[in-house]
Image 1 (cartoon, helix red, strand yellow):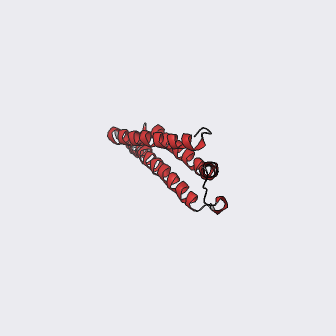
Image 2 (spheres, one colour; image 1 turned 90 degrees about the horizontal axis):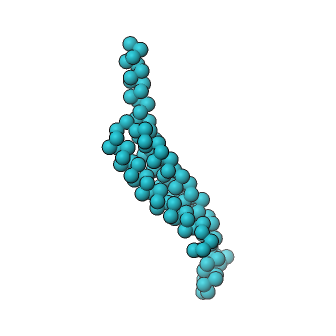
Image 3 (cartoon, one colour; image 1 turned 60 degrees about the vertical axis):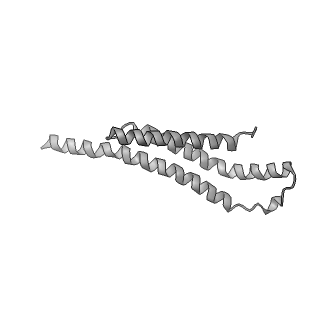
Length: 120
């Protein structure tokens, strides 16, 4: 009786990383979309039409400062999804989640780098 309970408990517990990996991956994309929504709500009227390049760069830097934390959070959630999916019950599903999370982490990491880099 006790062995059956342990096996069923272990079986349910091993599904948790698969579900958690998928939730973390979806959360990463939710963070990015939330960042884009936040940027759409910014009041950019203080910058005016920005006819010169320095004015446009100041406006873009202001937008990047508000969007960068969302990309950083998304990249962190993607990497957490990769780490969690290692312990998944179904190897095929874990491979799919880990692969998608790696691609997503590269996208969000590159976006974070471009938004927070002082050279671009």
